[in-house]
Length: 291
Ligand code: OAD
Image (cartoon, rainbow, N blue to C red):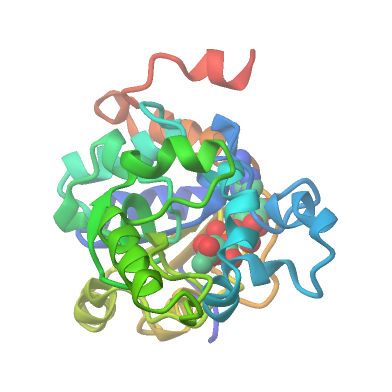
């Protein structure tokens, strides 16, 4: 992709935001790090926190086959990514202001913390590309429960079992005490997308139409390393300006403008420059930044 001649500076970015009517925002773990939630690939990120497991690739903790063979691996670390509740960042607020202004086409988030919803991004404007902890499903009988039901066990690093399948397991063993019962029989799995699983249907239902319609792309707080979300950037029409807001540069994409820094700071700066009606509804910003 060739960069656009007309979108080069921060003033151009402000002009594009003012002009845009259908902004597609891609978000990743970096929009929640100011809340104390680790991202994945930074030096202190989640994948370095699970190094002690000695896996050949830390992403294996989210591997579907491994979960089915040995769910205890995932549940030994799942507590580390259990999302906090009732907080959101200034960047989350920035998305809600775009929504209030009628400019948000869709927020494609890779985050599983569900904090966009808490901040007020409406369900119809949000695609949780990698699912969320909001619900969990039994891998055997597909019984679905609210995430909060299994959160206490996750915190205790215990495997949560489906009450229905516990009965089925007992019945099986009663019939034949040598019966083969797989490790993951009746285990609840949070409805987050593991490697080896398809993305939620809403992603596939919506992305084609949104790619055709969007008039500005903003990517925030993601390393854009995981397909198919990472591929969105290559698929928007060439004429659509692409803006990056990220702590680190992203070299494998050709953004028109890269606003490098903490996304909360960049969002506050942009909101300030865009005018009073863009003020972020975020009273605690100074507290969160620790300033
Ligand atoms: P990564 O950890 O790969 O990337 C986070 C990006 O956010 C990095 O480029 C950081 O520089 C940047 N960042 C961190 N803090 C920031 C801040 N305060 N302001 C601005 N930028 C900041 O996380 P993701 O790209 O979200 O998948 O990872 C994508 C997927 O990989 C995740 O959804 C997860 C993981 O495997 C699943 O769990 C299925």
